[in-house]
Image (cartoon, rainbow, N blue to C red; front, top):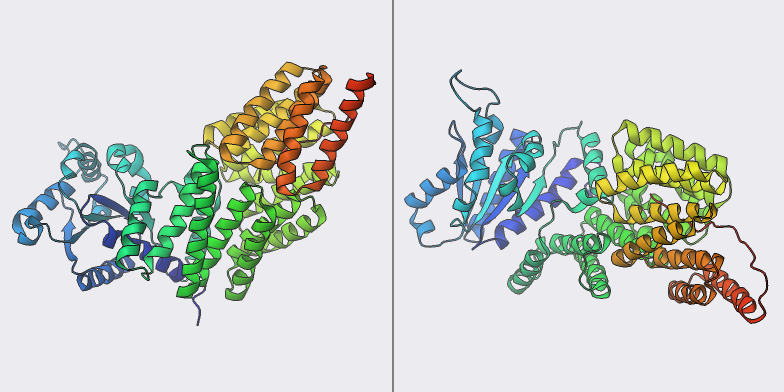
Amino acid sequence: MVPQPDDPHCYNEEIYDQLISLIENSQGRLAPIIVSCDDSTLRQRIIMRYESEARQVQIRPYRIVLGQEPSMRAGLEALKQQEEHLQDGGKAVFTVTGAELLLRVKLNPQDEQTELDKFFGYLQWTREGLREFRYPIVLWVTQRILREMSHRAPDFWSWRKAVLRFIDESPYAAQLLIAVNQSQSTRDNSTTEFLPPLAELKAEIAQLTARDPDTRGLATLYDQLGQVYAQRIEQGVAENLEQERGQAIIAFQQAVSQYQTQNNRSAERRSLSRLGSFFESQSLYLEAINCYQKSLQIAQEIGDRYGEILTLNGLGNAYRLLGQYQRAIDYYQQALEIEHQIGDRHGEGVILNNLGNAYHNLGQYQHAINHHQQAIEIRRNISDRNGEGGSLCNIGNTYRLLGQHLRAIELYQQALEIQREVGNRNFEANSLIGLGNAYHSLGQYQRAIDCHQEALKIKRQIGDRQGEATTLFNIAMVLDKIGERHEACQHYHQAKQIYQLLGLKYWMQRCDTAIYRLNQIITVQLPTRTSRIDDDLWCE
């Protein structure tokens, strides 16, 4: 029987593959691996399992249990002094437990710190002393301790090799798995917060390929590599955009291929969905649809309801961006029906927001406003700041087309503040585009150009080609309005070239129409014809 993704066992198996791969490939260097697990029985079972597998490849396991003086470094030093194997540089893995038993209260009134305070203090201030322990160190903590670690021991946190989470495998764990999937699927900076650095990932893949190209852990590393490249592009920090775009695609495809070989259908579906999302972010919509369709088929075959929602939403996004709005609405409605069945408020907010965008595209503005208002209410209730900023931007687009420009500007500014706070560069650019269009409508042309230029810079940094073309088109309209018609023509031509590369014929025709009209004006000085400004971009 194929394990069901709704069963947390399937999720934990993928996390275990990552853990054993890290243990095998981190020999000879300090590699703190922070593992969160609140189920003591599950924790013990996993430890025994990876210790057994480590012995099979001549990696000797050691254990350290934190006590009243919870210094991890002291425990490591004591073991090194006792063990010749460690003194001779032998392969090893250290398992550190006991953090979950540390008290949050003072044992004696005269104590200055609780046991947990001491633990975080040791982590923070003895980081440099760990340099000599060039081994994987698996530190087991609870989810509550994990949440505190980044701000109570920031120096140690910055050295983490990876952060992994195992979840309760009881019958009541399905909702927790949904929450984990939600945190992994949102498109903000937390998405890849726990991924290893790019250079380390590439080195591990090279080492593992040379040693054992058929190992299960290699698929996970390729999937992580694709996510890292995608994050670099999305955040605008890629050193060579075209090269890293290609490397992201290759990495995801390698992961999909290896998961297929392993018959790991759940992991295959996730990698396909990530690849589809990346294609979508790069305006490669037909490629995205192909990945989403394959992901949807797998999700339906193995009963992965949450995966079904993600891929239906992805298909809706891709078809909406291709201008097939009713088809997009059909996919969104299917996703929304499942969201209602499983009671997923976060996902419901996402789908309502996207339905609002599609109804806006169809010119059904009141329907659009109603859906966006429902999305904003949900997102505020669940403290989804990134989603709230996106919905504020989207409802601003609708109010602007209804002629309520000052109201739209107010909404765009609220959205922009949130998007800069959470670091969502794509949404930030979309709000700037909305502001530029609103200022254009109000006749504040220099402000409009400034907003569009700032958005254009971001769109180019993150590789959003359609967003880049739309912004160039918007700038051209403002330049046309102020009489800079030769420069406007140049911007229309640049936009058309991108639309042509993307195969977006409708937008190519709009550019051709605008260029023809401008050439006529330049030649015979015909009067300028005003057209409606409706070139907004959307936040999901």
